[in-house]
Length: 430
Image 1 (cartoon, rainbow, N blue to C red):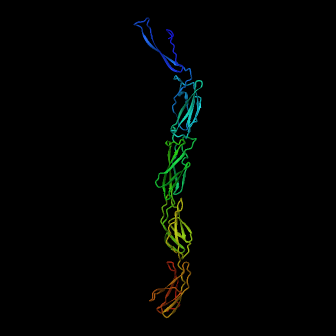
Image 2 (cartoon, rainbow, N blue to C red):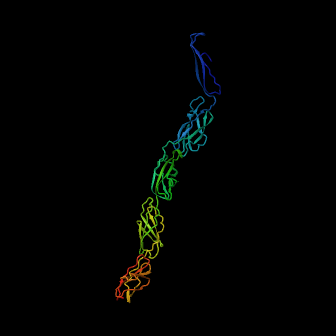
Image 3 (cartoon, rainbow, N blue to C red):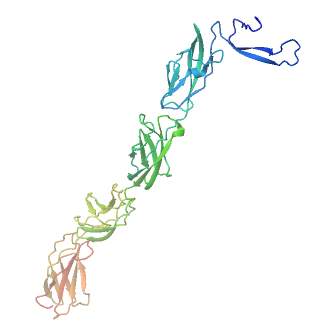
C-alpha cells in the first residue's frame, strides 16, 4: 500500500496476462467497532507484456467439398493474444506448398481454401503458416485441410434400348448421351460394364460408349449394366444404367430339300422352314450342284428348271431374313431330270404266213438315249400282247392268218414313262 487509499501492483518483467489484487475493506470508525461491516474486494488486472510474447493459435480442421467455391476462413478466429484477447494485431504468411488436391490463397488474415473436383473424399493435407507478432516475433503454425463428400446431386443416365442387335456382332451404345452431369465443366466417365443376362455375350467400356457383343447363337433380349462416375471419382457417387439389346440372328439351317417331282430339265423341291431367329424369313436360295446355279424362291417349295437332262443333280437351300443368309442345308438326294422320247411314227408292216414284221425309225429323245422299245399287238396273239426289243425291227410270229393286226411301238429311255407311238396297219393280213 502506498497510502490509505492507494495500492501498487508490480508484476514480474517476464509475465504478461491476467492478474488480480484482493483486499479487505471495512466501514469501521475505530478499532473494535462491533457494528462495522467488512468485505473482500478483488481488483482484476491485465498485465501487458514488456517483452514480445507469442499468440496462441488453435485452428480447426478446414473441411471443403470437391469442385466447390473456396471456403473463406479468418485466421484471427483461431488466434488469441497472451491475455486471451482477439488476435487482430497479427500478420500471416504461407510457408509451405499447397497440399495436392487443394488450392489455397491467403488474403491478409483470410485463408481461402478449395478442393479440386478430382480430389478424393477423405483426402487430408496440412498447410504451413508463419504468424508475425510484436516487433520481430514469428510463430510457426499449421492448418489441417480435409476433403469431404460432395453435396451436389448425383449424375443421372438414360436407360437405352437397341432394337436391331445381331448375334456375334458388336453394338456400340453412347450411354452418356442425354446424361445429367452435376459438374458440367468436367466429363462423366464410364468405369464398368457387365452383362446381366446369363450366357448372352460380353460387354466392355470404350470411352464414353459401351460395346455389347451378343454370343453366337444367342437371340432375344440381352441386358448389360454400366457404371458411371463423376469427376470426383467418389465410388459412393457412382450411378448405374442399363442397355437392352434386342438380339436377332440369321435364320437357322433349313432341312435338306426333298425331291418332290422330276420332269424334263426340271426338279421340284420342298423343305421345312427353319427357325427365323427374330426376323421374318423373306426368301430362300436354292443352289444346284454341280454347276452352282442359284434360284431364289419365296416359299418352301421351289421348281428348278433349266437343268441338264440325264445328269444327276443335288440341291442345297439357305434362308434369308433382315440379318443375313442362313448356312446352307445338307444336300438333297440325287435327282436326275429326264424327258421321255418323242412318239415313234407308225411302223411299216410286212406280212408272211402266220407272221408279220414291223420296222420303224428311232425317235428323237430330248432326254436320255432310247435304250429299248415296247411293241404292242392287238388283238393279242397267243405269245402275248407286247414284247420288248432293243432293235428298230421285230417279227411277230404265231399269228392267225386272215386276222388284221394293229401294231404300235413305244420308245423307252431312263425317264419313268415311255414315249407314245402311232399304230401301224398292215397292207394285208398274214
